[in-house]
Image (cartoon, rainbow, N blue to C red):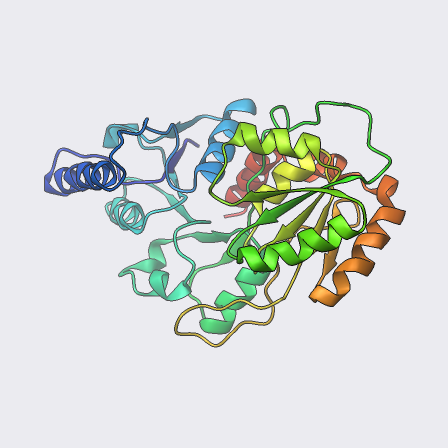
Length: 327
């Protein structure tokens, strides 16, 4: 078995391949016009953290695979299409032609199951993967008779990069990092003021406004992280936090809004939160008590232990291979 990981179509020499190549160039030109900058090409596309985790995990466990092949002859018999509906369409055509044997689609192809249903010949897909259980349940709620098997698979993190600078666990809660994602400054400042009122040092980090090195530095400064995001399908920023041995207090409204659909009340802001990694709170009024409880049991949290057992790149790669073997 040879696996190929795709996050865009393979650039063939036919008309289809030329179309995808020209479109990629057009996208890059638009970015340059919009920002006025020529940005360095990233090593991984799609959802960077997911693609990076799977590719690096497969390398570490020494699996026979290719990533982003430059020629259709380099494609293996099992195609894992992490993202990009065009790449999935191409995979379906390859399977229809008998050139590959299995297609695994996800976890970042689309948030909507109807996008998969609308693909012609979706019966050629062997497995859809989603990053969390609550999203899987929502897909089945939207399309109860979804025609493709769905399983949960989540990415890991590089536990060698994301590690505490001090190997000794912290025993006293003094510093709080607030992670702000898709919530307002005013909303975040309410929690910042509450933490400061308790005599805690605080810093705020905003989603999309930091480098990985900056985030790691702030994690190593902090004792806990207060995570403010309406919902997460996996929460990779949380995995990175836990890998640095920083527990989290997570705001969890438990509801998700998708345009055109009724609000889904089974959502989560931290699908993989556990007793080792932190605690939830739901209402603003619950924050003070929840923070106090974490402070009193601070030494009991062992988030890095959870990551090393369940959330590394290698474990994520093994988990995907196990799903493929079951097909």
